[in-house]
Image (cartoon, rainbow over all chains, first blue to last red):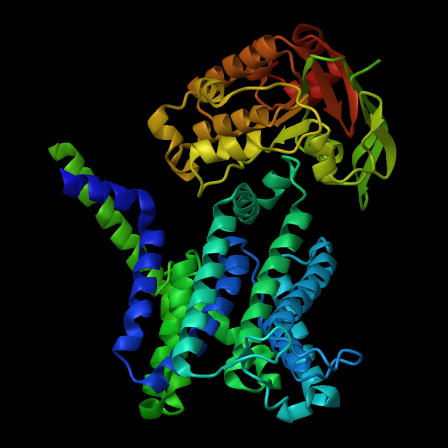
Length: 345
Length: 239
């Protein structure tokens, strides 16, 4: 009977939250089992997971296919780099990690707001057209980063400082793998939990309604352009935060962080993981990157071919994504198991 | 003062005069059925009232307020809520979430106020069905769900675009009862586009006949069916 109550409790929690907690527990104890250099790698994967969360939110939940989400990641990366390197004209003395994170997220969110406002207001720029325009924006951003000397051109900006606990970059630097790992995991968990709350809120439900039938939602009085712009802004801000954290770990910002290639990659991670579920999308990013790190040595250039094939197979055969499908099946199994116990009582 | 007043409304598509100098008025709490042959401009009229299309001339006023230049969601917020011809519910969401989304609609002022139990009872949904995805409903029940959603939003003017399209005879009869019941109980102003003459007759409301973008005659079903132009153009030889 107690087992039944326990299972019923698990079922109430749902497959999604349960798998999130499980993944969090696994990652929390992982440092006890892997070598230290692996941890630094995983810390980067968690940042990619954060980036994937932003793509899942805008694409999976809101149904807006952004083919240029790396623009916001890259703007966050460059924003963080220029501020913590003391390059912002008039603010050379300000090198605070905290202000840098705020600046990067605000810059990306602000850009997303302006772009969203401009693009969503255009009545004919729906669906694939929006995606293509974002693709062009990513291309332009990449060219801009390459040709703008202030941003270091093709070489990018080097020697970006790591996370500094001081108020203005004058405190302890966090560069050891273990604390970096836990900071990345912690930020990912907190932001993912916040996004999960947004998705479950009434605001999130209206976004879902707009994805399902925009005209019906508009005809109920919801200002769907405003909702989309706000969602896009939020996704841009999260991507910007991911970009900012990325450069503190990676140490430099380059045009590769802002362009089309990374935009396409994040799309693949989210599709392979599962775009309808936040946990699945995040784990998709971590999984693909971990596989890439393990397999690209053996597969070499065939890795991209392999990844492309997996992407096509998932899109065709598993619309929920590999991890999304697993979570779905686990959730159903749990439901059956606990309802079975209920009838036993 | 008229509740809804449409004057000189014009909307042409290239050479096609979908709505061509149309006048129409509705008193508060009135139920009106608009009939007319295919392509006479009925759905275009709804699209103009709801702001999905901009008129080239003319005005639409609701309780004296000019709706003509407002955006679709602002018109909805004024209390004009529409049911689309193709059932437009949220297939992936449960029936209950569909209704909750509609009852959370940000209307400026609520015409009617119904709670979840009343809405469920009206459209005939059991507790179990309320938790099921709306996409699993049969066509006719999706139509009823959407009608319930329109009411859940708290409208002061309801527009129904062919609410019985694709329904069986039995479902159509139930829909007639549903609409008459809603109108009798809540006294909401309603305009309906219909094709099914049997349906129009049983509604026992005013009928406006639309042809070539205008209302050519208006009255009870019995009055309207006697007009020669209607017999020729719409009811055909069988009437």
